[in-house]
Image (cartoon, rainbow, N blue to C red; front, side, top):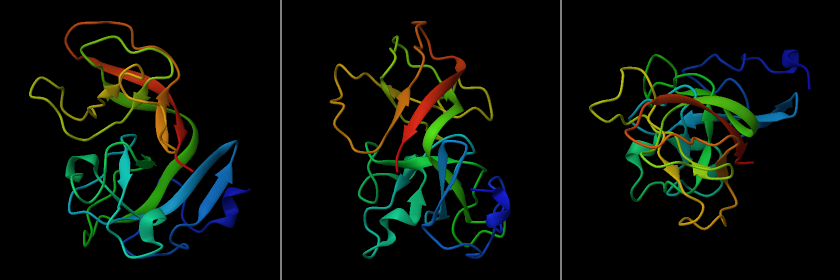
Length: 180
């Protein structure tokens, strides 16, 4: 599908619903969904967002939240996708509507786990940062597939190993997003 068929470029935001909320747009083997940041915390570009489980019927594919605000409103094991830009929170004049990538490969900024992670490990990026993290880098804890059952319908999977063990350091990870 040609980019001209959507009104808002993939990396731009709006403070109002300019597209069809929840609509999926496909291009170059990837899929993107127009969503609203329903939380009071910003979403990190190239991080992750979670599906809002407590939304009224039908909104689960339309409203998302930052992983740091999970708990009873969203769970880490059900990612919604990867934000294409840094979304402001609901009510923000910086824009709470935009695109998230819901399918296909993407390079994301993540903090490395303290243990090695193999290809196929589940990965969830989050905006929370340990005190040792450099400013502006998304923290991305990974879930070892050996201990986390790979049964979730929606997931973000490492495509290359993060093999270095030791303290967490900033790394770039290539992931396969399977959140459609």
